[in-house]
Length: 165
Image 1 (cartoon, rainbow, N blue to C red):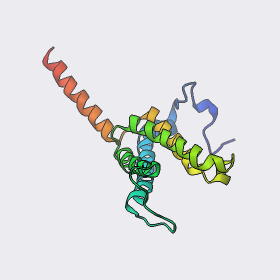
Image 2 (cartoon, one colour; image 1 turned 90 degrees about the vertical axis):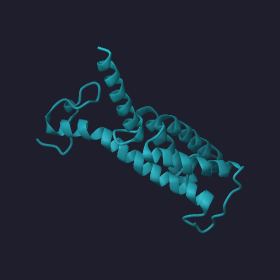
Image 3 (cartoon, rainbow, N blue to C red; image 1 turned 90 degrees about the horizontal axis):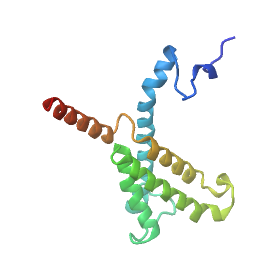
Image 4 (cartoon, rainbow, N blue to C red; image 1 turned 45 degrees about the horizontal axis):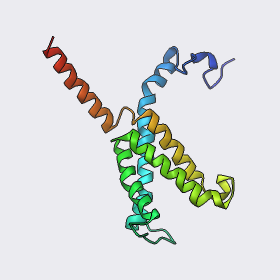
């Protein structure tokens, strides 16, 4: 009996695919898809900052907050933090800060309106919080400036090592 999804026997205890063409796709594309998720998340997050700070895209009830207020600080973090996430630079520390920002946003703005995120309109804050928390642990992925800097440092290190052998 054939199924559409790989069975649990396809995976070992480390959640890595063991063998076969499907396994190869998983292992080859996982770092790339991590980068795609990071890029899309950063792009979407930047829009929150531009809306708060620059008034673009303009919403129906949008007003620009004072820069030295909590919403102003959130706008700065959303704009510049989102841009850093988008390009994958300083991904882990920036994602950690943004995860905290979204946790604070949820508990200050949404949780007082009720327990369930779907009812208090906080599901996006929760989702961003946990995506950023994941990025703070996983890093920026294969297609990131962090990865580019890491590979250039390892190349420079290998040139130094081979020179001193």
